[in-house]
Image (cartoon, rainbow, N blue to C red; front, side, top):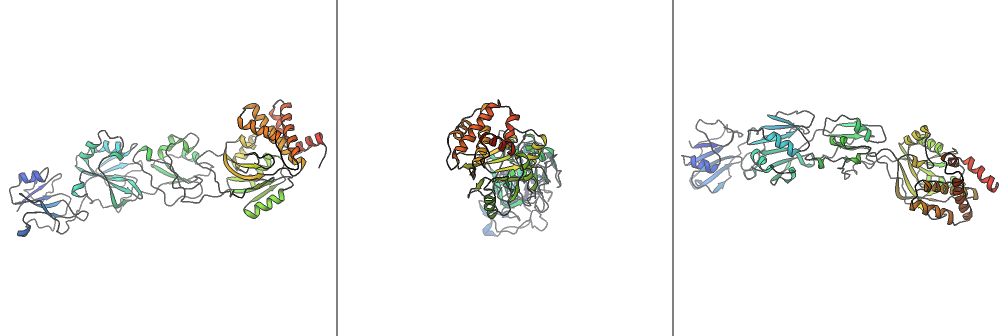
Length: 533
């Protein structure tokens, strides 16, 4: 029988087997024409160690494949020569794998492992910490976030890839959570490495993936996911938060380092979002306080559209504008005849069935390009969204008369508190969206033209006294000096009267807020100009 050599763990095949550092070392030690190179992972039960090559193959190195590689780690090597390699042999299957190191992400390890460690902030630091304690040359590193029920632990790399770091994808995530490691090489190459991605011999194994365990789901009912994240006690590395319905197939987040652990919304309104554990420590009042966010998966689910509510009181064109809106958007609802802006907006919130609603005001016509598809952002605290309107009388284009997507709970909270400023909408967190939503045609009568100009110019005058801005000054000047149409003079009168009223009230907010009431405005107009209409 020929000499038998091995490296690493002893196979315990024969009494005369010897340890060698390499094939060349084995050649130096060999005292027979050939020697066997073996390993403890292969099943040699049916293998014939008395086998010899035919004479014309005497000078070849004979290699037996495994079920995974053409080179299975078993060879018959001529003690001299052997440069030519013969792979034409039957498979010798691997029947076991190298030891397993388990990484616990906080969920507990459900697979058998020889070593285990707690996951810290990244895989590089975690691997270095545990592999310093390993005595074996090769190990698997497996993670508690994965399901290894069907995984084949007997896999091994080819002979020319022994020193690489082999990475197995987790679902669709290339940077997976399962590694086959040559321990000495890994520790040496990572002595001064900053991130694992810089390891110079990474091998992403093709056609073998390990499924991640299902991401836990948490449903919330608020108008923001922020509160739900604050409340949740994280044990898993990532959690799916959803308001309406969970996403059955979630994107797989890369856990290799802090910067790759991204928040991943999977719906346009961000109401369903995958949140890494680290996010909780970063957010203050919005998820965007966390610096790593990936919105590329938001096309997966269609968001819920918000209701449309048409709000009217006594506007002459109200019925016409409502008919046009309802024909184009049959889902639109209507609130009519409620006096006082705050009460009308709350009435609209009561008829709406969605957390936000689009308020369309009776003196406007919805622009042909506006389709009510904009959705709120659940990764922020609740707010109102203000869209631009084009003023057909003086040409200004900004939020005045524009469609506004109101947060219903925000309206109710402001009304309950009774604490709102001169601009009701601005008394709650809000955001201006630079989309043209409608045309504001308020000049149907002398009174209605005057009323709109009076309220808006008075409001602008008040805000300019508090905090002057270039935009505010320009808009106020335009209201007071520019107007076209049949009732142009009443627009200018209304604007100037509004400024005069605010100034004469000495900017006292309680007095100025009388202009919120339609009855007060009508009486003010009649007192000044008579009952013209």
